[in-house]
Image (cartoon, rainbow, N blue to C red; front, top):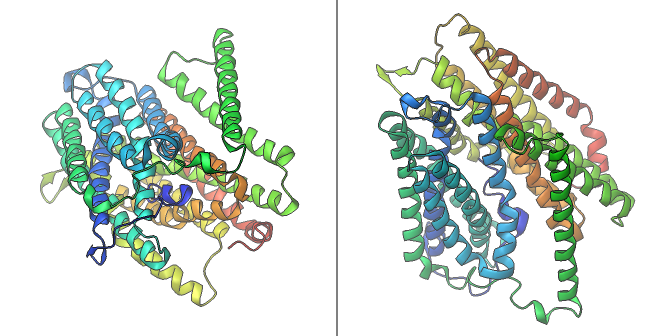
Length: 513
């Protein structure tokens, strides 16, 4: 979950002019409380619905579900996760250029709530409409609420970092509580009641956001480019040219997809086909961006070496999230089908285990922060490539645990939930090693003139990871051991290979730690 608040690092803080000065929320601006609880309720709605999503899709019609195959459900799950990341960039652009971050967060929250309420209604039409609305609303809310937190601290520095730490706790508190409430309602009462509860949570967030808006001062009220006409001569025309180029590229991509569909090379008529095509599009766009920057981007030798390192990190990030994001898909299905969920004499819903990662994050994030500081003071802090390597190995180790768990369950006996708990612990350790490093390092390595574009490409790695995770979940079948084993081997081997190249990569980074 650490990848979610990091959007702020990618896009920068909100305009800090006229930020409120009062400090009565743990010594921080009162506006932080407003954003803290808005984010808490948004994450409550997001992770609550996420805990139910693949379980609802694969449940039979007799049990109130949609009766989808695991392959179709996994593809939809992956497309949904990918969409959340892909819409963050246009959501930030819309706020910066047109409506402002304050309105973007409000509009996003309302759209998210409508999406959950749509899913609370029976029927596949309302289900798909709900997913689409949640994706669009999250794209508006997530990047802009994080940017507004930065805008509360015009002085920057340590207080700003501490403010984000508090804000980050709201994210994980919401993610921890949600499966316990929404998941239990959905599995024990009615699927649609669970989705409705997620919507009610978002409504609480919107209401307190409106009531607490007075504490935000002028932060996020106006678009950041509201004074674009006062910029350098020719700036508006250049921006118009960029828009035209973007439209041409989008039109060409649509044309190519139509031709490929007519030729039978892609399938845009099914969820599985869309997921495969979506992954292909993301890979193509990322490769095209890197190729253009290397050949025609006007980069010097140092910048090209650093861009190559970003390419390595992009591949590593994709592999990591392809494993990690199976928590809500294949691991959730394993919890339902192969795990003994009796705890202290009570049977817990499978979705309850989705709270474990957030609980570990809450407990371990301060420990990691302290550990990196201590190691840095002694000159022992691992470099960014070393942390990426560690994250991949830990992700793979988590799936090695799942190989053992699936083998223990192969005879039909259900296994202890401690197998999944141990897997989530290893994945959390991997997340804390890799995720906070990614965005920060990329912003340092990317040429400043294309850093915004580079962050868009970086989000593509997370989107691609989600799509791959969904497709892997669709191949789980009755014997998950081969899939778990393949992910374990891929993660561990990729991490070890990356470890062999830590020193060359550090040299290529040109002094960036």
